[in-house]
Length: 74
Length: 382
Ligand SMILES: [Zn+2]
Image (cartoon, rainbow over all chains, first blue to last red):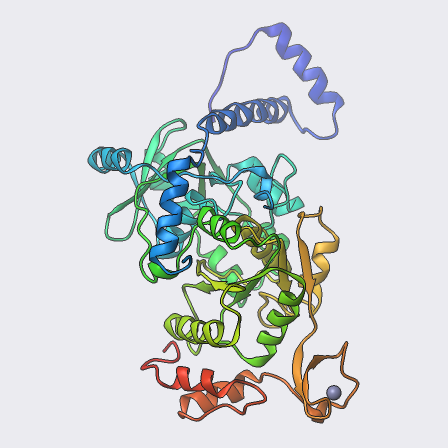
């Protein structure tokens, strides 16, 4: 487990939220949950930005060629 | 043409020049060795067979799939696709870094962008996905054999080779083009791990009566002892389709995929995969993708009523048989006669007779198909 530094006032706010919640047993749990959500979203969008190659006209011609060679198309 | 699942046909196959760059760099990067079945998953992801998956699942998608049968964004997805690694491998990896996925001989298969490293509760996964925690279930056994850590992240395919059976191995982009060129607006997908008997052929014909085309899609890969050899399945289906179906109404291509035997959840996966291939209809018989007594006979059909509409028609069939009184094929829905008159496709009879080199009774299997099978050197997996 690693430790991070955050402003004291923020820590107080987070203690309050975690303390009022039934879902989280500690401020650590709450902070881990929230940060993980944000991190996953960020990393996932980095993945999505790497757009899948879109099939071009050239690709389509190649596809038809292969289908013909294999006997799927006349 | 039906949209792929999640509305995106994933293409993560690297162009040859980019693939070569990664081949050169591969030895300087951390590597994860992946087994034969995982190589199939990597290739399927890259070729869009598992669209919209772009890689192995991160924790959010994984946990959502296990609990809710959806990806984190709500898209229906029934089976976790994860890459397991041991503690030592995990310690070599960092979030945001790239790692080479290599086969057992060390050949680079894909490059992966590491986005998540996490652990899981195997009993909880087993119960949710397979509805049992018993190790006797082959899918559960595979799960329990996995290493402790999972690595999530997108992949890009370096090795796009298609052996064996490359001549029967079409990508979703290819089947979609094929269906379009044939002018098929509706296509029924049929999943199989067997040689064709008359009961299956009957379902295929029923489906083809209401669609433009039939797509026979045998699952190729790891088999149990006593299963038909892949080559035999392909040869016998090739014979059936070329001799007994109109030329422009039926095609076959393989699906390299490891069975998980997750019954109902696996049926949903099988449907989604066929949607990605361009099928508008998918045939689900009784006991689809089950094993032992873990799932009810109708569960694999009923599950489709409990999930969000996949946008395709699920054709749910009863067991079919030849009825001597009717003088034709039927199911409990269409034949009123006694069990004694109904000849179903007994796996035991088919196996015994073929292994002795005998023709299976015509009520069960076409003699031409029996002959094709008997001619093979190896009929069954040892
Ligand atoms: Zn009858």
